[in-house]
Length: 391
Image 1 (cartoon, rainbow, N blue to C red):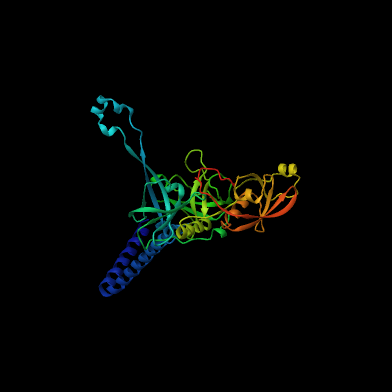
Image 2 (image 1 turned 90 degrees about the vertical axis):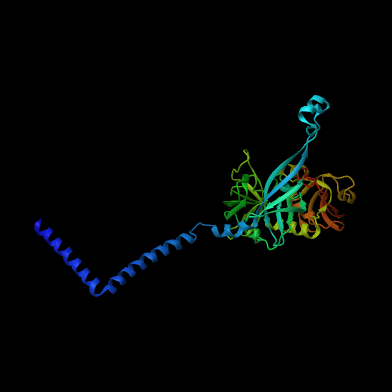
């Protein structure tokens, strides 16, 4: 044991002696070794910093960073008058509470989101976010707040365009909703519950959702990205930050997200937006009928060989269809040569017709096919909660 200890002590002594000689005779050698060590440590630190700043697999920070500046918060105010207080006729009551208690105004506030679609200040949102609002305030992602005015609304699709008096705004890039597929990753951006701008992630759960009773015209993108109250009018974007849809509704029994949210496709939003900006409103065709789908039971009772088309269940008196001689029980199978698959398809085809023009409708009347020309009317404006007579 003593020999081992003596050997260790001698080795340490010789090493220290060599190090002392190097420091005295060749100090630059020690400096270069220190520099090399520092360089290795610096490189390691740089690698750590680079790895921290580079998105890892599954990160969507670039998409969020690109889209978030284009999403705004929308605050609306509505004045609501309360009825006159009946106790104001009592002089004693008026003495204690004053004449101001007779009739008071109270403000009702609501919250939503919107998407900047033009650097010139045009913002796309939901109609239900801004309908009946007396004042609208828009809060940009950078903290600026501006008054906004309604350019136009379209209750049939629950879309609206508002504008702020500011230029060079960060407009969002429009994506290709027609190329979206079930399973694609999407991000929902908005201001849920007024907690501040929030990004949630999910996938596209379904495409072309309709007959939900939300809007007159429905072609929703369904997603499980969390959408909550306050998200309405916000953006649904792809993994590149491009706009795919406008978040508009959720299916919920609690008021919060249950993983079933709906967004209006950007293709619909773009056409509605352009019509509102250029014409002030969206003009659609109308023939004045009420229809229903052909079910197997109805096909059997009517003795039909077809499973496509829309049965005319009712005709608006004095409307375009009534004037053209269309009767309840007729089956609409084509509009301007385009096949009618069901009632939803019929509504969309008729809405694309130009009011005032003549359109050829193909019908089955008592199992006999006939072409009828109808002078297309203009679809009347309806409230979003009312039933559509052509749905």
